[in-house]
Image (tube, rainbow, N blue to C red; front, side, top):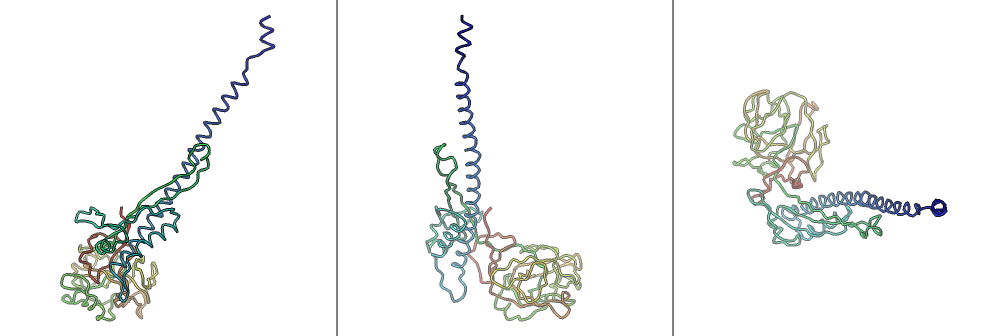
Length: 336
């Protein structure tokens, strides 16, 4: 009789299967929510980091124009915050949480000077720190109870003195060593003297060598660093490669030809050695308008142009701008 009852009334296995299926579906939904919405949150954070980086660079460029305004212009501190907001928004940020002006002490520790709208702070600032956020809707907000994801990131950019760059040419700027009259006694650029120097031969069989030897032809085949003895590299008629770093001028194309265009040149205060063993002590950089001579790549002349004070590449350092002079080449760079 009991066997018959069991056959007529089987255990409710279907109900157990439904419970397990519901639990499994719930677990899958949670995993999908974590994977998809988590991935979306990660992508949003990356986009916000890009927005913060771009906004910090834009704000610092505006700060540079405020601290070192082009001749005939009136600096406006409000352009710093307006540029930060514009660029952050263009790059997808929902909100600019903060925009702060900063400077640095001798060991590189930053200090917060105040908001980007403060003229008092801007007169001392050497960089801009921004904090931005962006909010996106989630796919599984109704299931997880989190309808949106907000990513907040920050970035800092600074105005630095340009310290190192690669150039195909190097010019002797010390008249005491047979060079052109381009430098002050302390090795800094003298813009007035550089302008008055006119057209100079920077590459050819006979160029001022500052003591770098009779084989010196004005060529540079190694990256050069300020105030450091650096190997000049092999001399000859072949001009080396160059990646343009100038800003606000007519740039020479990467790799050449270097004719009727502008490039950043290192200015040598003193040379030493000879031939492939020649070294140079460079104390300044400046932008020159370069023209190829009658022999093409075997001869170049140049004259100083004072329209570019900011570069977009190279290596920087020495953030203290308190003693900035009109000949200083500055580099705007994201802080590490």
